[in-house]
Length: 298
Image: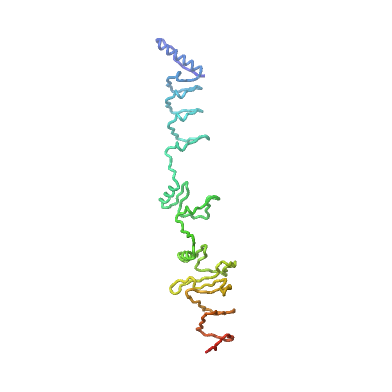
């Protein structure tokens, strides 16, 4: 129970002092009965130690507390009573505790993607990593997974995008091949390479009627490039309206046979053909027919 120590009356007290002492006795009796210290019971306490027991001190009674240590037990301190809290160790927040970002002072600057790109450029494009992504000049990896199943690579996000023409012609492909110093070049129009090696090249193996089938050889002739110096091509109506393999050349590029040739089939020199034999002709074992004028043999 609460314990109170009050001074006893002393000889020589006047009426006013005795009245004040009786008033203190009266208030002390009230405190002993209800166990509370309120503004009517306490005007000032100056002591080296205050033991309150189960007594309560209203917040309205406390203006300033100066002490080296406060042991609160299960007591609670309202945030309205705290202006500055300096913690030298650690703060443990309970499951319902929260910190509002607007209440944080000296907030760090949160950069945007544009800021990250500017910082990357300012670093002379050194590898730069932040919460927005990884920025680097070259990525060397065996495998790159872009965002898993939902990942994508946007062509619009690429810098220095190559020019993709709406219609890419054979001439464009040939120019690109020449600019690459004739390295092997593959696009939708075909395969361009300096040399092909293989056992068998099948031209139009599926027999498509709409696919051009043939071989074209280009070269320099008369100080100019001839793209079709020699062409061996299948024409559906190449033989007077019938399918045939046509060997042709443009720009009057001659076709020269330096190897020994043997014709096992039918050789037809059509109307308008000019055949010049500048070398020796051996008709041994040959049968010559169709001459309407006498032939002159030397």
